[in-house]
View 1: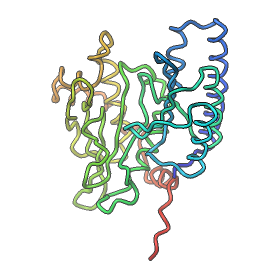
View 2 (view 1 turned 30 degrees about the horizontal axis):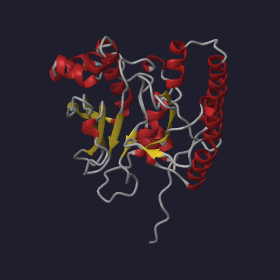
View 3 (view 1 turned 135 degrees about the vertical axis):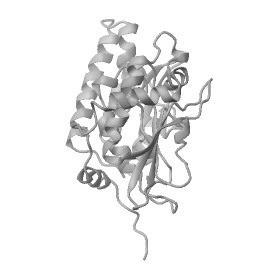
View 4 (view 1 turned 135 degrees about the horizontal axis):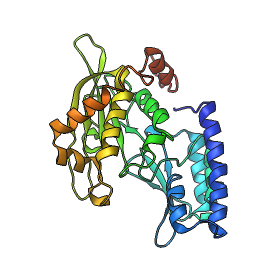
Length: 300
C-alpha cells in the first residue's frame, strides 16, 4: 500500500485550502467560468450537463479498508450512495454539489487520497498491472517505479499545461496487463543478460477516435535514467504537439506526423542535456520507493 510522506500531507492540505478559496470566489462571481475551468480541472472536477463529476485518484489501483470506507462515507454523504470505477484505476463521483467539493477533498486528504491531476492537460494518474507485487510472471514489482513517477510528475511546473492529457503506464511482468502499448508513454521492465532490470520505453500509443499502438522509442534504458528520458519525451511533445485542435493534440498524432525515427532523434537530442542530471535515480531511491509497499504475509 502506498504511503504519503510529510511533503504529500503538506501539499494536500495546502491544495484543499487553495481550492476552497477558489470555489468560494467562483460562486461569489469573482472568478469567471473561463478562469475557473483550469482551476477545477487541476482538482479533478468536471462540470457536466446535469451535475459536476469528481474523479479521485487511486494510485496503482490499490485501496485499503480505511480508504474504501471513506469512499463509501463520502458517496453516502455527498453523492447518491454509489461511485463508478474507471478503466484507469480511478473512482468517479457523478453527483456532488459544487460548493461541497472542497469538503470532499478534505475528507479524501484525511485518508491520504486526492483528486490532483486526474483531469486537465497534465500527467495523469500513473497506472500498472492490477496484480503488481503478487504476479508469478513478474520480473520486478513495477509499483516503486510508478511511485517515483508520481512524485516527480505531481505539480511538475513544466508539464502542467500540455497540449492534451498525458497517461503513463508501467509493466513489470511477462504479460502486459497494464496495456502499455495503448498509453502516451509505456514503460516495460525487462531483465538483461546479467539479470539487471532495464527499461523498454514506448511512446505514442492511445485509444479514442484514432487508436494507435505505441512505438518503441528506446529498446534498452538504464533504469537510473527513467525520469530524465521521460522528461525528454514530454519536452518534445510539449514543444511540438498541436494546440490548435484538441482531436489532434495527443502525442500519438505527433509521433505519426514526425515519424518514429525523427521523433526518437528529437528525444535523444533533448535527452543529451538532461541525462546524468539531478533527476538521475540511485539504487537508494528505488529502495526508498519500494519501502512504500509491503508484501502480503504469505505462509511459508
